[in-house]
Image 1: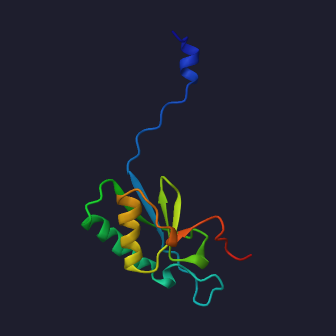
Image 2: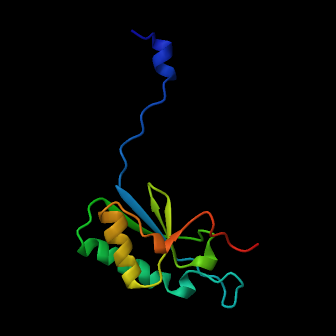
Length: 124
């Protein structure tokens, strides 16, 4: 049996996640003409709204779609990142959103043609 001092030093377990999947859609808007552009200027707000509605229509359990400020991959936007996996996507159409929700969120797969990887680095 562990002594009381050892028990008090143990790190408590994390609580269970509130959401099974958390999707963040960048809706940051930079001034028109900014050299990096912005996700909002490329239609991310409408895509985020569609993603929220579509996830609900599909009956996906434990899903949360949120707006995010700048995710610092502006050149590739509109950008979405999905947690807990930390997978990044570029989604420019409703069809892209449908494919991400069905393939990644519902079925646990990936959509390679839309994924951003470590090779997709904004120009310096």
